[in-house]
Image (cartoon, one colour):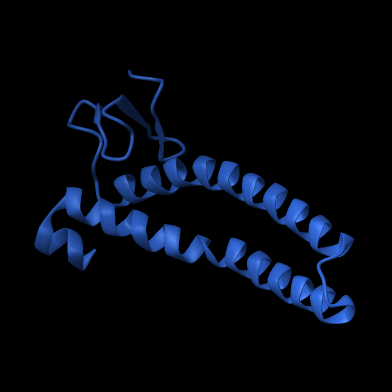
Length: 121
């Protein structure tokens, strides 16, 4: 919120994204660390990379793909919550454009306090 006050919404949204992305990278980082340790164990055991390394790499690729899809779904939700908290995305009539929604018209559902990018009242 301090960045928003000093630099404005556009810069603040970049920092909000960068912070969220950095926090969420802990998941693939942990998977990568575990994969590296298992690959090292496999190499030290036989002196060469065996089947365990191939399985670990496959599992790491699948988990990274799943995380990427999950992150791509979660960031727009986080951006909408941030925009709502900052009072962006709506005018006196209850509709407008919000940062992080790609310039789409948005409406605020007063009952749920939620951005509805596809619904403009």
